[in-house]
Structures are given as C-alpha cells and as structure tokens.
Amino acid sequence: MASIGILLFFTAIYIRTGNTNAGFVNVECQAEKVGQYGQQSLLQCVVKTTQDVVNPEIRVVTWTNETDHPLLVFHKGTSKPQQGYSFAEPSWNKRNMNVSLLITNTAVEHEGVYKCTVMTDSGDGEGSTSLKVTAKYNKPTIHSNPENITLNTNVTLMCNSDGGYPKGQLRWFNENNTESTNSSPMEAKQTESGLFNLSSNLSLLKGSIFTNYTCKVFNASGDKEEEATFEVQNPIPATQTEEELGPASKIVAPVVVIGSLIVGLLLALLIYRMRSQQARRHSTTPLMSDHRELPICDYDDGDHQERDKTCQVSPV
Image 1 (cartoon, rainbow, N blue to C red):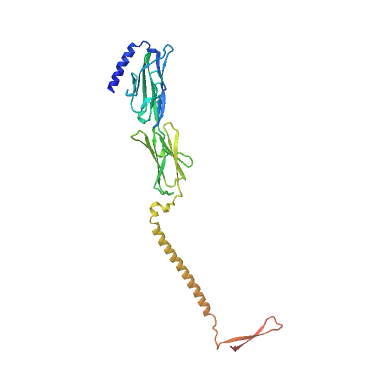
Image 2: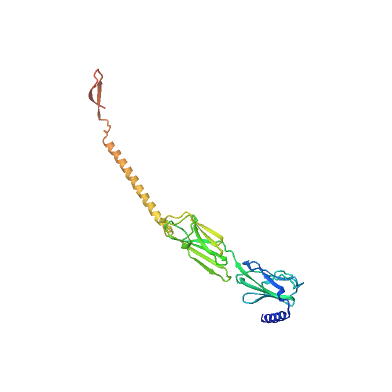
C-alpha cells in the first residue's frame, strides 16, 4: 500500500505540473447514499468536462475513505481494487467518465465519507460523498416472568429485537394503545458486526394486568419497523399462584375426603332420626291378638241431630 501511495503522489505532481487545463475537469458526486446492510451500495461519481475538452482520457482514479486508505486505484491502464470494492461498470475503461464505486457487501464499518480523485489528460478534479448504513430490526419477541401470569402478582414482560442499525428504540403499548415506555428502561448492545441488540423490560404491578401488551421497535428515524403482541391467556386467580399449583392436589384430596365424611355423617343422622320416629309411632298403636276385645258400637239413627251410641265390648 505504501508503494501505491508514493506512486500516486509522484504521478499527481507530474500531472498537476504539466497540466494547463486544470479548471476544465470536475468530479460530481451524489451527496449522500443510504446503503442496506448486506446489500450492494453504489457511490455515484461522474467526471464532467467543459465543452473545450474533447475526448478526455482518464489517467488516474483513486477512491479513499476517511482515513485516506486507498480502496480502488486505477493507474497506467490497470485497476487495483481492494476486496469488496470495484468500479460500478464491470467493463470500465479510461474513456468512461462514470467512476462510481461499488461496495459489494455493505457492512456497518463501511459507513463514512468517501473521496474520489480523478486525473485526466485535460485536468483533474475531486469529489466526495457519504455513506449511511441501515439495517432493519427483526420482529420482537416477548417473554414473561413468571411464565404463568396471575391477576394479583407482579409480572415482568421482556421484549427483545436484534439485527438493526443504527440504534433504535423499543416502546410498549397496552390494549388501549396507551404507551408505557417511561416505566420500561431499554438497553442497547452493539455486537461485533456493529448491529444492535435491543431489550426492554415492562414491570406490571398486581391488579394492573390488561388482556394484551404490544412491543414495537422503531428505527433511528422514528419509523416503526416491527411489533409483537403478548396476550394474557386466562389469568390464574390469586389463590392459585404458580407456587401453589404444585401441592394443590395434596390439598384438594383431603378436602374431598373430609367433605365426603361430613355428608355421610349427615345422611346417617337423618336415617337414624327417621327410624326413631317410626319406632315411636309403632309403640303407641294397640297390638292385635286372639284374646283382645274390641268395642262394638251400635248407632241408633233417629230424628235427633246427635247420635246416641251404645258400645258393647265383644270378644274378637
């Protein structure tokens, strides 16, 4: 790389010294380019000349970044690009005034300002452009702690989204579309690739649980990219918390047994009372026997309204 830089230095001195038409050449570049992470990015620069210049010939093209590191060099009819860089037109030659730079696989590290220096047989010029890199965030994922949500228990919802750039934001909304971001601090971690991993925890106090909660991810420009909704499925009553679900069967079984015993005792008491009442009724009724005498009553029907009756005791 040092030899290329020295060569370009002396070449530039030679051309600048011997060139009397330096003002006839201009390099016009697109001011800014937004490149997508993992995609190609085209940095457009075109050489413009005045009408006095006929059939200009390019002798040197140099593309550098902010650190003046050479990315693509054309000199003496030969192109020497670094890996991942090339002219936008594969069949580019010294008569082609389109000197645009193509980045084949855009990464976060490619973000910055680029400079294109062109030297021709009719003059030289220089232009610059900037590249901004963006990456779309993945759909958020939401988990709850504890996993089984109760109506009267504190709950924490955890939202995560990664793969985005620049740094974005996670925001929470309940089923009424009311935002709860102020109570849910966000943490952003940048990975080795330069992309961000966003995480946010939403704390819910007992008694404040809605049917669903939505976590939305916004990019650096404030535009929503993705969202995910967490639905609370049949919240468990407070008496059946997660800690109590385990030994619940141990509690239910004795209760059922005790209840059965109580019902059995009540039925036994009821039967006992019914039998006691029947026994008392039988004790007050005269018993029939062969030697028992029953009264025989003769009624004398007459004109009287009241009947006279005469009872005689006759053996049965």
